[in-house]
Length: 100
Image 1 (cartoon, helix red, strand yellow):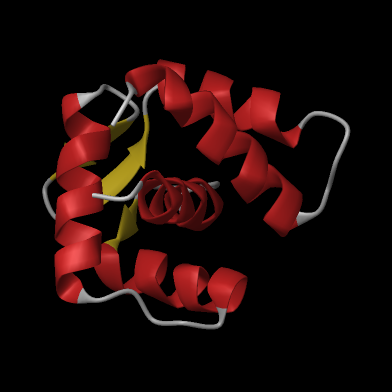
Image 2 (cartoon, rainbow, N blue to C red):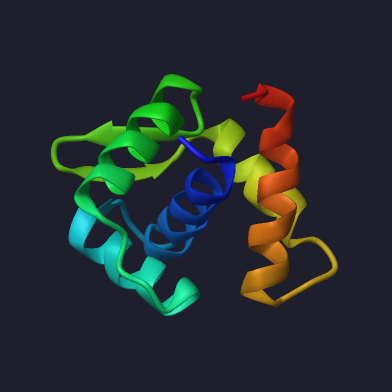
């Protein structure tokens, strides 16, 4: 899975789950607002699997939220900017440490 797609879904999850865990429909809607594109089911499923496996997102029932590590990465990516596209770019850079 492409790091750009994973970081996009990660950002959408962070925004959708700011107040409470979010379902995939909410995450998909936020992803559409960020990128003006609706993620495919495969993009969502593959990204969430990767993010969960790497302890950045947790799943509880049918809802998702950020783990402590995921929240830390989101906070780092959000430093000094309020622009979603810049935060997305920063997250993509952060995720480079995972390779692939």
